Image 1 (cartoon, rainbow, N blue to C red):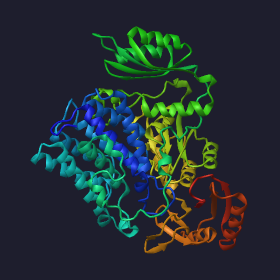
Image 2: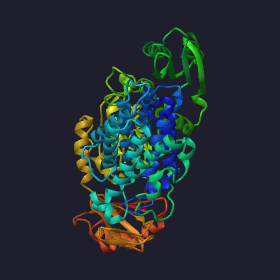
Image 3: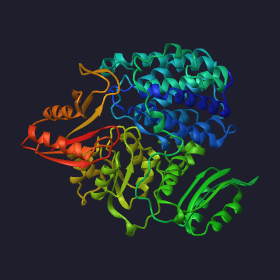
Image 4: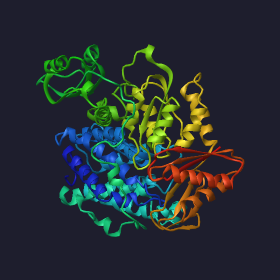
Length: 598
């Protein structure tokens, strides 16, 4: 990275260092949960998001211009975004790409303006922005960058001002959010963003080699983490290089899947639309992404030789892959579909910076949406449903409700925007409802609603119990949007509790919690019960629910068993004789019980 100007290679190196620095601190960021629960995943979600962004940018290589590298990163982040922190990070990168549009190289003021555009995009992605979060950090960091750039044209000094402001903003987050102050932590998303900025600065100062050091950069010597005590999280395991979230219900048999990269011959241009039209005439699930010099191609067909022959007629081929999908195991097909969705699906925006403007969603000049899979109109039902489930038992219940596609994932394994989009594209419905069943999946689901070709509405369910209640209110005679309102209301009509073991000492709502104690969390009221015995914690929590419920359902998780849950059910009946109690296998990780009362 030069002192007064930066090209695409420098931007790629800085971003690579930023990702490495976040990876070195991912457990630190995961540990900054307000609640002492075992599934803190903000760092893992941010890391998975920026890894996906880096993969797209790396595909262009250091020869790419600054605008192309930024646009590729924005598209990769969009498709790979996991969790609310990941979605907001993807929007920051989208704004940065908009700010660098048309620039082969950029200077300090360009960088500052791009960060300011990232701030605006991030705030625009959140319906009700809350200060004391990652939004505050990016706003104050970008403001510092603008102020510095107006006084000094040195890129390193502008980045240094950005990092210092981010550091200070993170340290101030507990003064803006009482819940952070009481829990003794700073905002986790803001800390993750600080680590990204810090890694980029370390690259600017000393090259990429220093970026992976756990305490790289000056800000690390006074890191703003107020509390990181407790066991190391499994956050880094939630964002491996391969995909950990599978899409249930993959199609059965596609012939051959052919993928390659075609490079235009010297003096000639590639026409993505023409290539797409031809491939659609000989195959299905066609995805063509790129620009006039290179295109990524993906197609399912019975004649891969014809697909390859067409590519050879256009130019030189590389990264060729041909797979017989009929001979692949179902889980392998699912992994490949999810991976392609996040890495290459209609990646026009990854190589055409104009496609990242407005929504960073689709081809330039289009409607900002990605095309759905080819489905015959006669095969489409009026309405289809996609649901996210965190356990095999919960997933089976959703399928029993008639949900056409279940994305297996949840807390500590949030599905990406790309994976949700792939699920939406695969269901046979003219309109689609998405049930995220987790507050940390809602923003990604709403991004899918903006990207998909067909109408998609999000039912903002916060757990599987709310999802089941919402499905009972589904009216097949209404469209997705009309259903979403009444289903959301139905989901919120039940009372629910999540029971898990605390992973560290904490104070929540004035109540002291010790590591190892069982805590009951209400999605509205937060912590409602604490006890050293999980059964007592459940009964205490149920006793704090609004009276009048007639049915209590216990969904037991992966660390519970049927016999123990039946004993708990009998004790609940003893304490609440007017309520019927049902026991259901949920299989959810991290939470011993999910309880619903209605």
